[in-house]
Image (cartoon, rainbow, N blue to C red):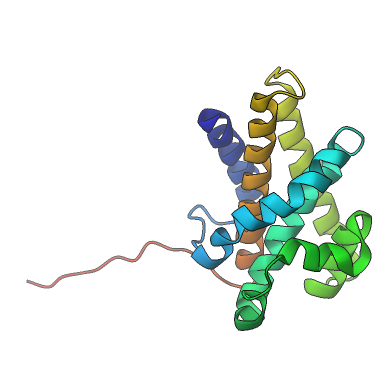
Length: 181
């Protein structure tokens, strides 16, 4: 499964670089990454339930969640870091089905073209990941299928956070130290 997650990572990374949504060097944000386990545990019942009929939503919503957590981190982390269940906090604003709209409108404050462009971009990322998952030929309902799904969610969450950090001006660049003898 580790190899599959690396494959998802590489595909999303190259795609998002080509769209100028992330840099070659991805940002590190341990606070956001540390929230992943709790978010995943809370999200899985809803995500799994929705996957068969709405795989793009089941996968894409996690990318939005990553973006929202990155935005929370940038603005009011002292408050948001203390919310026990950030996923439920976001979901319960408008319900699971409208969580994407809530995040785009109320968290990311997007309107018009920016709103639509992000919707299409997340949809494309979710579609790419779903396609890769389906090509694994894993038997549905197995432990392997579950682990593959969680690997997909993990990468989408991390790339959602990386995209948002990039959009907010956080860029990772190599620092060179010049030493004069």
